[in-house]
Length: 167
View 1 (spheres, rainbow, N blue to C red):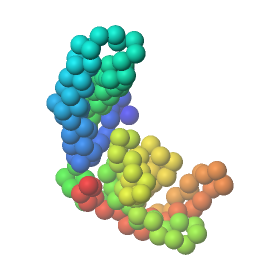
View 2: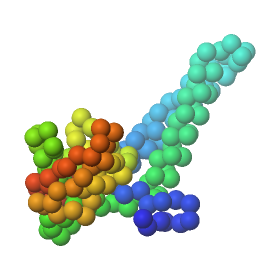
View 3: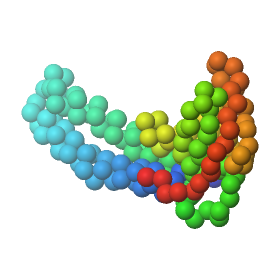
């Protein structure tokens, strides 16, 4: 895996995932944090801080916001945006692929391989480092792969590989 420096691994992410992180960071920096700072300043002016719930909660919330801002900033700095629509046409599975598989129980399943910050199992978005995505990586449409799961190995057939916009 490529790295941006010796400590920060690359954060593979789709354009929509990148935008979601940027939107959250903007919300925290420009809306939530200023509002909480205002409440803390108001509460601090009310005297005794040791029993002032607004002050104590506000300070705790500020620490949470600042911690999240630092996390998002690092994730965005390490982000390598990969647009599935810009990828050349291929039937091989890579990051950002939408893959339809036939599971051993006879059910078809379509998954989207996304970054670790974009996981949404209800919308079939799985991380590129998940066991299923790892066994699919670099396989081709029509291949069978083996997923080593807690219930033993499962053979999965890759029915289709597409590179579509992931929202």
